[in-house]
Image 1 (cartoon, helix red, strand yellow):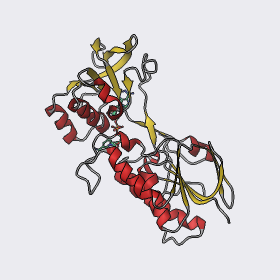
Image 2 (cartoon, protein in one colour):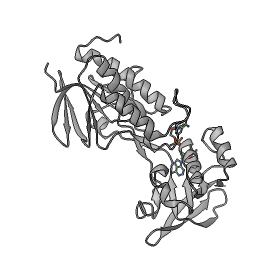
Image 3 (spheres, rainbow, N blue to C red):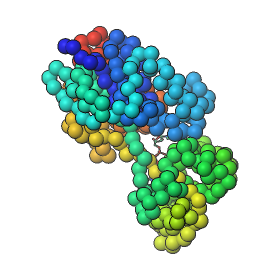
Image 4 (cartoon, helix red, strand yellow):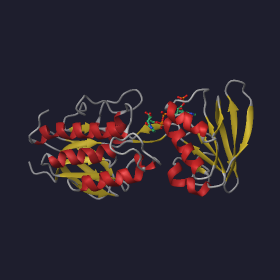
Length: 307
Ligand code: NAP
């Protein structure tokens, strides 16, 4: 069979880059499609401190290194969104914003997107004080008061980052206990971050820009107002599973793609890896899953594979 590419990888985050390296090194012709410029959500991490080999490295720097490495083995097709995938007996047909390609195997590494609060003012003030990325937008709030909403590791890491660049940070969490790693909680407390517990944001208000938020204490029902210039929302992620749904992949109840131990989905020729498959969602596990899916995919294109 004459394919345009033997392996098409959708999504250039940690899983996608790792899959590209493993598929390319197995002798396959590989393309990586990404609607943006690649790097995935890891680029939003101010510091990554648990990727083996690097005690501390910026998310952008780490992903640039991965991109450079993967580019040796795969064609990077940035700014090209995959809009449809059809699966046939002997191939898959990928439709993108630029064309159509016949491929032998597809590895979906489409990751996740930021969960929204879905409260009044959130959409209205997006980009005018409401942000989902502290490393991208934190600079604009230097010397100002900001709220960080969420109690997971991402929220705490980003709160620490904002504090370090000179913001006055209040973290608002809906329970009285963080979900984040204990070490991060200790660091946040030591750095002087304020905490508001058992509370949810009810409304974001302002004029041209955000001026403050209304907060409800879920234990007492009391409503209070906090004046802030910025609201950073970090309340978890939702899987980007639109393509998976189109192909008819099996998803779990939260919408993550179900895979076996080698990244195989329920559809022949289609594999998945990284955050879109759920799990612990770490950079290192995304890389591992990308590697496994790539190795398993060799079988469907008739290349040597031990799996
Ligand atoms: P997460 O762990 O899912 O945490 C989401 C947080 O947002 C939770 O505290 C949750 O509250 C809260 N939340 C969810 N929906 C909410 C809503 N509608 N309103 C208010 N609060 C809401 O998400 P994450 O922090 O983005 O982390 C994602 C994954 O990446 C996790 O597996 C995490 O361990 C991993 N990660 C690891 C590191 C690291 O290893 N250093 C760094 C970043 C991320 P509840 O706690 O009450 O559920």
